[in-house]
Length: 161
Image 1 (cartoon, rainbow, N blue to C red):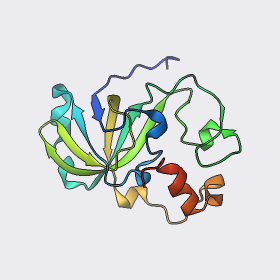
Image 2 (cartoon, rainbow, N blue to C red):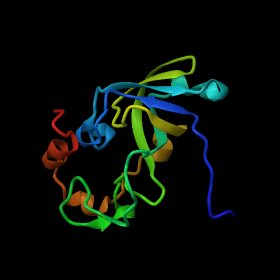
Image 3 (cartoon, rainbow, N blue to C red):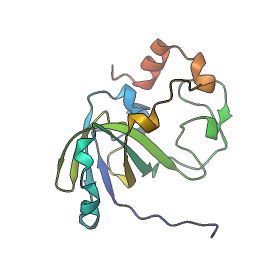
Image 4 (cartoon, rainbow, N blue to C red):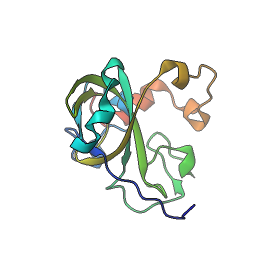
């Protein structure tokens, strides 16, 4: 396996977010924010049957996140944490993921909601959200379990709500 892997963009994510410091930190704090995914024509065929799903995972590149750091101060905490125990964007491989609501598909364009991604972000992949596979009632959330919902909503929405 080569040390360096190469990925190709399959499209671009469009949103009203243009400033990182004003963008909600997760889709749950961006409820109702509309955006779209513009899939490049050569990948449109891969969107077949996606419109039967209410939610999709978007995998993308944090293309404006700055240099990587193995220790970060997460948005919802004042204590430095290992980057792999966070969803912070300054990662060795700057990969992001968001679970968004799929409103409709029109050809190679997906109308979405709950967008927490900067406008123009390069899209790497799309996967459907499947309750049977993705929900874990017994899940623990590490240090996140110590953050109360009100604080998370206040910080996470970045003044949006």
